[in-house]
Image (cartoon, rainbow, N blue to C red; front, top):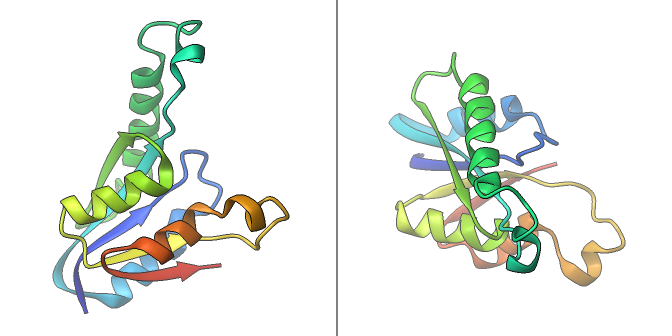
Length: 135
């Protein structure tokens, strides 16, 4: 049983959060903390100069609002949004916050995934803790 679970959530909610929450609750110890985390991809400087000044932070705030609405009825679940590279940021967040399990959704690999890899694959390979992958 895990006490500090992380659920990475794609900003576009490509995978419903409900299934990941069910799994997290099933493997959680009593009184466990569950965190739903979205990562807003950084925008390169050469692109950022053409966007409104606070675009990245405005995007993060909108995603946080949507994530908080998704978990509003979920007891013991908190939300967080960070800015960075998805795979790397999830791993850093898990380590920094002492997460002992990551519950992450994945998809069937597509052609480009064999060359670039998916976020879930990167998390599985480099996680500092247990990882449960949903398909």
